[in-house]
Amino acid sequence: MKFPYGISDFDSLITRKFHYVDRTDQIPLLERAGDQLLFLRPRRFGKSLLLSMLENYYDLNKAGRFEELFGHLAIGKNPTPEHNRYFVLKWDFS
Image 1: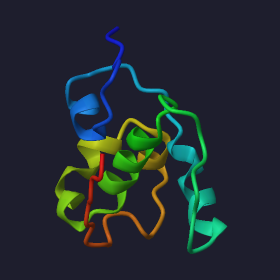
Image 2: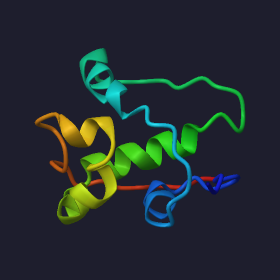
Image 3: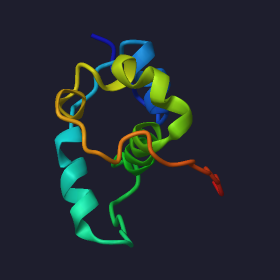
């Protein structure tokens, strides 16, 4: 079992077979929460990895890889109608 210390890219984490704690069952809850979400967590708590996971889940360009990335996770077994439905822009200000 490989631990993904310092890796915040969901795609590489899954394809390189690192250990991942599945929290994708919370995506439907996030979709019902509202239009704006604010994630307040201390540093090193997985905020960037969460956003990367959501980017891969909603990105229209990743539709062909949905089964590869999410098939073994909770949301892969029961996806919402919103999966791979949007064009995603990623801006990194770090």
